[in-house]
Length: 436
Image (spheres, one colour):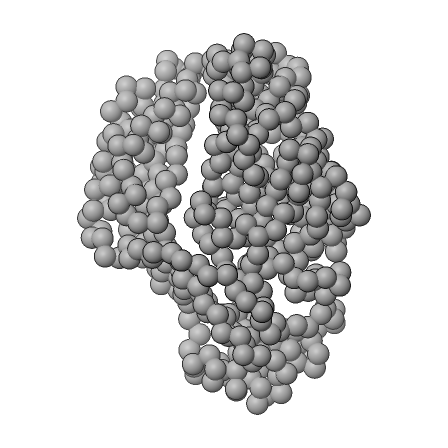
């Protein structure tokens, strides 16, 4: 089918043409007070057509495109190209010399009866409610997704990838007294349905929620700070755009002139690793057909170079790195390489510090160009190398670039989040904590 579309486009005078098609099937279920609250099924096919007409690259995107409408879409692509006044590199990729192999056992979540998925949620909700500190469960959610991607172009490229996964979580409301109210949840992502254990999931959520109760504020000051693995992953995710060739082109990163220079502590190794063994999603190629590759963005504290799509690689006269995803340049699994310290060892020398387990306002409170951040936070007080008591109502402030130059230790507890970013816990020498 796509080959016929390409032939039609070429007959209309389009020089080169590419079809990027994504079939996405999803199921969303939610339970509230032991009753099914939401049941939504979705099947969507989106098609993006990229073509070069009169040396200008144009794009059209539609959902559920039928053969009968292809001609109109190609005509629209041509009209869009004629209207372009900003001329950017016009490239349809001929393909990489080779592509990594991805070996995944794809589980068919559709084969599991819906009633089993609903019962999973009901058991999860009731298990959390069994905790005396839980006043209610706000929502209990299950979602499964299957995605099939095809990339075909007039230069002979013909690639495909297939992913399936599901995730579930419940938001518990924890209450002690009239004023001490906290929420907690833990998202479990699964590659097969048997990976879900509602009792273990409930225990994790309860442990997280109970640990927040009885929180105190602390005096404003500079403290040694440890970010747990989830929170440091979130920090890395927010600042990942500074390593983009697009940001360099638009002068939206301070690293434009820093390639080859040491910018972080020598303990820091940041890797773009599309096939990481622990990653939820393994990516053999990006959305432009460039083979994904493992590469150090930061090696022993040294910035090795930007991530590029076809356009920015052409602008900077370098090779594309296989990081074109969605409408921009993104990491293909962004990993802070772990150290060999367990959590207890990581905090054992901290006499008076803070463990950060919650951050709020990660976009509004962050300036990626300057590196400045000021974020509402919560966590645990660290005293004499041990967790002492919960901390709430604090603000953690600092500068990302300075922080990454004052890394005392990196833990061994590497964990991926749903965005494909992975980090262990990280001990920072000091950050400003705003409290009472």
